[in-house]
Length: 215
Image (cartoon, rainbow, N blue to C red; front, side, top):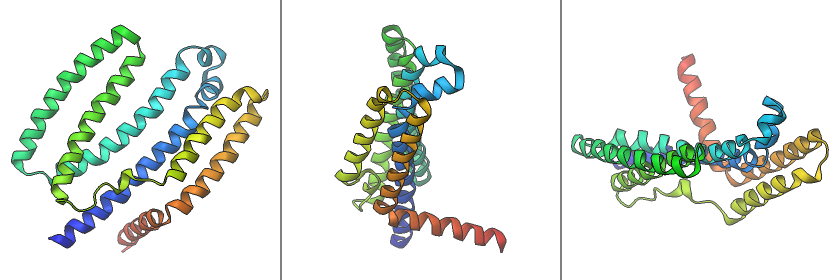
C-alpha cells in the first residue's frame, strides 16, 4: 500500500509540476505578447480594444485551470464515498459563492469580472483538492509541484517585464516577435536544466505507454 502511494505521489508531483511550468511559460510570454497576437489575428481594432487585457487575464486563468484539473482528478480518485459526498456539498457552496462574486465583479468591472471570478472559483477548488490530497498522503512530501528555485521564478518575471516593456523599443513587429522567440529559446534551455528529473520521468512514462500500445 505504501509503495502504491509513493508511486502515485511521484506521478502526481511530476504531472502537476509539468502543467504548472507550461502555464508559467504561457503567462511569461502571453501577457507581453497579447496585443501583438490579437493584432495579427484580428487587426488594429481588436488589438486596441479591451482584448489584450482579457487575453492577459485568460493567460493567468490557464494556470488556475491547469492546477485545478490535475488536483481535482487526483483528489476525487482517492476519496472515500463519504468524502465524495462532502466534496459535492462543498462544490455546491462554491458554486453559490461563485455566482455572487460573478454578479458583483460583472457590475463593477464588466467583462474582466468573468475571468477573475472564474480564477477565484478555481482557487477555492484548488485549496479544497489540495487539502484532501494532503490528508491522503498523510504528511509525505506532496507540495513539490509548487516549489521552484528563486532563480527560475525571478528569471521568468524579468523575462515577462523585459518583453512587456520592450514592445515600445521595436518599431518592427517582426523584430519584436523574433526577440520573444530568442528569449523563449533561452527560457526553454533554463527549464531543461532546472527540470531534468521531471522531463526524464515524463519521457519514460510516454515511452512506456508507447511500448505497451505496440505490444
